[in-house]
Length: 191
Image (cartoon, rainbow, N blue to C red; front, side, top):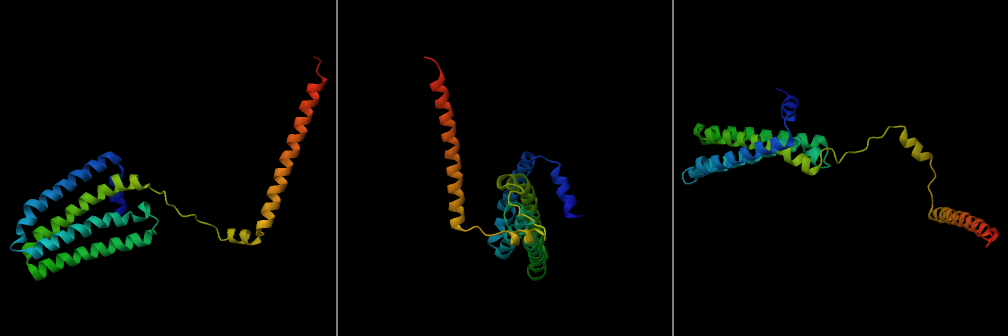
């Protein structure tokens, strides 16, 4: 399944629906942690740590996918960070299953999936509308445009002052002529 296909599935829903689904997913994730993962802390603190790490890493992956739409960071950097977060999740699964116990995977994998399930609609339904989808776009220029700018003369400060002075004096001359014509019309009128 391509990531664009997954994005198309979520584009059918409104932003409010995605925010609602994200809120429900976040509450389910919190309930899972409170009642399933945290009670293991006394005997298996390392499983709790790996589960929490899996949650954070998987929660950040969809945010990294949309990082270019939310901030001015280039798209490539967002995809790189998303790939790193997915690789870290794979390392957490391997480390938990191989070094701790296969028993730990029943807490680590759902933690990561709940984190991803709550972050994906949150990113699309809340973060993108808040931070403006496409608000920070870079301007793309043609290669030929650079040559046009090279041909332009740089305007100095003195040239700017001289041009402003000429514009001001032209405006005053037009205003004076207008006032004189109006005054002459008033003189010719009979009392």
